[in-house]
Amino acid sequence: MRACIASAVLCAQETRREIVNPSPNAADDTKGNSNLVPDVYAITGHFERIVILRFKYDTDLLAGMQKIVKEQKIRNAVILSALGSVRGYQLHQVSNRTFPSRDTFIKNPAAPADIIGMNGYIIDGRIHAHMAMANPDKAFGGHLEPGTTVFTFAVVTLGVLNDATDLRRVDDKTYR
Image 1 (tube, helix red, strand yellow):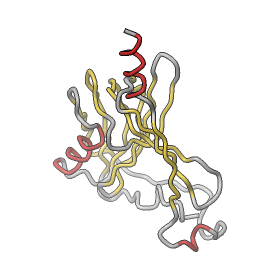
Image 2 (spheres, one colour; image 1 turned 180 degrees about the vertical axis):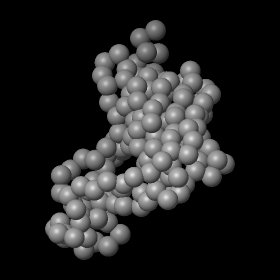
Image 3 (cartoon, one colour; image 1 turned 30 degrees about the vertical axis):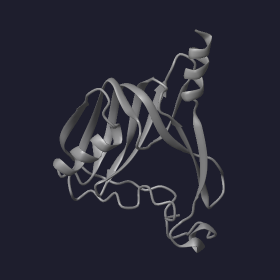
Image 4 (spheres, helix red, strand yellow; image 1 turned 45 degrees about the vertical axis):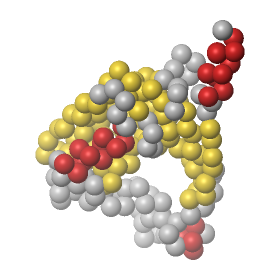
């Protein structure tokens, strides 16, 4: 019995890898803030509709979101909430404080967790989703990556914005 448990634990161990995430133009990583870019600015828009996505067992969460965004022709949206559970996950987290940025990818395909939240944006059809999860020992989260598979079910709610809403620079780390 112990051999089976030890074997299962070894197979289910979490893996981590770090990558450098340079800007497309390497010089952007060394530039300072520009006085032409405001410290903070507001973007106004209106929700055109709310779309609720429901995922079944063993579905890849990110791939399912990408499929619906394409099918529903969603250009810009706000990820409002999520709930459910996963059988395993892959996410990444920022892992340094200076440019170029570095990301640590954390993968555990056999670790179940509850989805306790998700937020982010759909920007010109591209998904930028962050999710929070919990297991009996801890809460954790990061940027959603492929390989996060649904367990019981998952529900994600999107607020679809009108096309006049310009989100192009929302997650542009060089716009500073």
